Amino acid sequence: MRIDVTRADVGLSAVLRGKVVRRVLLTLSRFGPKLRKVTVRLSEPHNALGGVDQRCRMRAWLQHSDGIRAEAINGGFETAVARAARQLAKRVDLALDGAAGRGPRPPPGPSPRPDRRTRLPPGGVRHVRGVKR
Image (tube, rainbow, N blue to C red; front, side, top):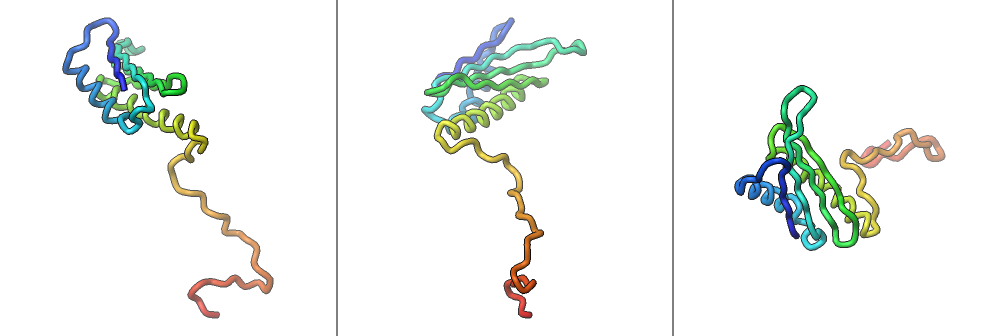
């Protein structure tokens, strides 16, 4: 997997580049050879309140599909990179599940409970396990 890291407007330090590459590898390495390339673009846009935020935009190319994108804006580059990498991992996972023909995974959470208001069997008594009547 090839990882390209760029930063808009100013240069990128070797320390920050190393941290970004490490985070991307930790988050996306489980997909292995299914990913061809990942690009990471860091920038510092001005926000509406007059401050400066750190933005991370990621794009991943799978072997047999178009690019998948994720973006996160936060107060620091490391946090923005971590959030964008988690988003991208979820989206890549969904794309690979759909490509395998299994369809998307159900959302996490409790499984739906069956409706308890069911019809009683003939005779009007429902058998309850372990209870003698």
